[in-house]
Amino acid sequence: MSKILTRSEVDTASTWNLEDIFGTKEAWEEELNAVQQDIVTVTQYEGKLREGANTLLACLNAQEELLSRVQRVTAYAHLHQSGDSINPDNQMNASRSRDAASRISSALSFVKSEIISLPDGTIDQFIQEQPELRVFERSLGLLLKAKPHRLSAETEKILASLGEVLGSPYRIYERSKLADMTFPSTKDGHGADVPVSFALYENKYVESPDTALRRNSFKTFSETLYKYRNTFAETYSTEVKRQVIESQLRGYDSVTDMLLEPHQVTKEMYHNILDILQEELAPHMRKYAAIKKRVLQLDEMTFADLKAPLDPDFSPGITFEEAGDLIQDALRILGPEYGEIVSDAFHKRWVDYADNAGKRTGAFCMSIPGVHSYILISWANSMRGAFTLAHEVGHAGHLMLAHKYQRLTNARPSLYFIEAPSTMNELLLAEHLLARSGDPRMRRWVITQLLGTYYHNYVTHLLEGELQRQVYDLAMNHVPITAVKLCELKGKILSSFWGEDVVIDEHAKLTWMRQPHYYMSLYPYTYAAGLTASTAVAKLIREEGQPAVERWLDVLKTGGSASPLELMKLAGVDMSQPAPIRSAADYVGSLIDELEHLY
Image 1 (cartoon, rainbow, N blue to C red):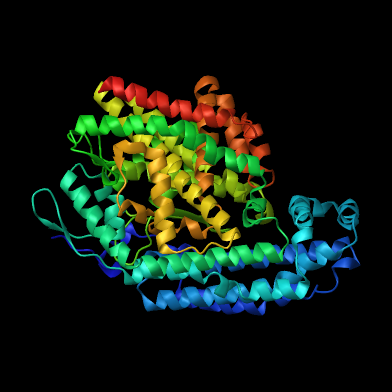
Image 2: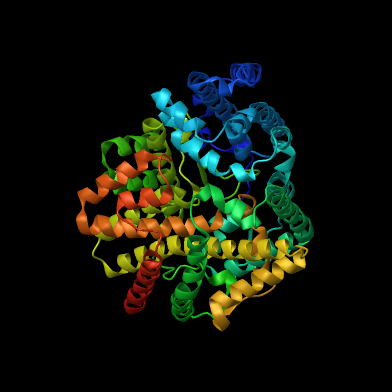
C-alpha cells in the first residue's frame, strides 16, 4: 500500500517558494513586529479626518500602504499553514499573524467610522478640492452606502478586535479536517489495500474508473466523516448564528441581505442563479447520469458514481509539467502580458502541487500585493486536475493584472465576478483541446472534461449555495442547525436535483461536511454566477475573435474599480437579466446531447 507522505518527504520542487515574500522566517518576524509598531502611521490621523481633503488623502494613503504590508505578513503565515497544517510552528505563526491583523483592524476601524460621521456632501467636496482622492471615490461611495448599517465607532472597534475569535468556526473546521481526521485504508477492485485521505478521495478516487474503488473509498471516507458530524454541525451552526446576530445588530432585514451587500448585486440576481439553474439544468444532468449508467453498465447510479469517467480505457494521464505546457498553449490567445504571468507561475515555483499529510484540500490562489500569486493544488495526474489548475491560473492572471493597473483599494472585484476569469480559462483549455484533434474519441473525452467544469460549478457549488439559502432562512426563523437537520436538507436538495435515478444514501447526505465554502459568506453561488458570465464571454470570443479578447483583458485590468455588472457590460454581457443563465444551461444541454450521440 502506498504511503501518504509528510511535508518533509515531498520533493521541494513540487512546493511553492515562499522566499519571494520573505527571504527568511527571521525577516517575516521582523516585519510582523514592524507592521504593529507602524500602526501609528495611520492612527496619527484619528480624530482629524474632518480637518480637510489633504488630511483624508494622507490617512487613506497610509492605511493602504500598511494594509498591503499586513497582507504580505499574513499571507506568508497562511501559505505555510496551508501547505502543512500539522506543523506546530505553522499553526503558531498563523495564529500570531491573525492576532496582529485583528489588532491592526481594530486600531484602524476609526477610519471608516470617522468618514461615515462626516456631514452629507463632505466627501464630494473633498474630492473636488483634492483630485488625488478620486482613486478612493468608489470605495468611499460603497462605504457611505453602508452607513445605515454601521454601529458606533467603539462597537466597530470592539468587533474588529474580536476578528480572530469570530473567525474561529472556520479554523476549527479546517483543523479538525486536516490535522485530526484520519481515514482507514480501503480496497480497490483487485482487493489491494489503498490509503484514504481527503485529498486522495476528492482528487483521485472520486473519478476512478475502478467502480469498486470509487464506492469503497466513498464508504470509508463517509464513515469517518460521520463520526465528526455533530462537531462539524455545531461549528457551522456557530458561524451562522454569528452572522445572523450581526445582521440583526446592524439593522438588515435578513442575514442574506447583509452578506449579499458586498457583492453589489440585487437579491433577484442571487435568486435567479439558484432558481433557474436548478430548474433548467437538472434535466440535462439527469440525462448525463443516465448516459454514464448505461455506458459503464452500472447496476445502479449511486452518488459515488457521478464523477466516474465515461471511457475508462481512454483516460490519458497528465503530469504536472505536461499540464503546465498545455495550459500555456491554451492561454496564448490572451496575449503576451497575460502569457508571461502564466509562464512564471509554472517556472518560478508559484504552484504547490505536492500531496502530503496536513495539506489543505481543494485548490486556491492567493495574490499578494507587491509579490505575485501563489496557487495550491494536490496533483493526481488527471486531466480534471489540469482544468482545476487552469482555473487557479485564471485567478492569478486576473488579480495580478488588476494589481498592476489598479491601486490596492480598487484591485479586487466583488465576489459575484471573481470566478468569471478562472472559469474562462477552463473553457479556453477545452476549446484548445477540441481544436487539437478531430478524433471522435478525443472529442467526447474533452467534452466530459468540460462537463466536469460545469459539474463543479453548476452542481457542486450551486447545491452548496442552495443549502446555504435554506440554512439562513431556517436560522432567521430560530430553527436549530443540527447535524440531523443538515443531512436532511442536503438529502432533499440532492434528491430534488438528481431525481429517482440516482441513489442518494445516508453517506451522500454528509456532503455538507466536505466543503469549506460555507464559512466564506455567500461564496458558493458565485461559482455558478462566474461560469455563467464566462460562458457568455467565451461565446463572444468564438464569434468575434480578437475584439472580444481585448475587451476581456480590459475587464481583467479594471479589477474592482467597477461594479460586477459594469465589468460584464464592458465584456459585452448583461448579467442583470436571466438570459445568460438560461443560455448557459442550454449550452450544457447541447454538450450532453452531443455526448449521447457520440456514445
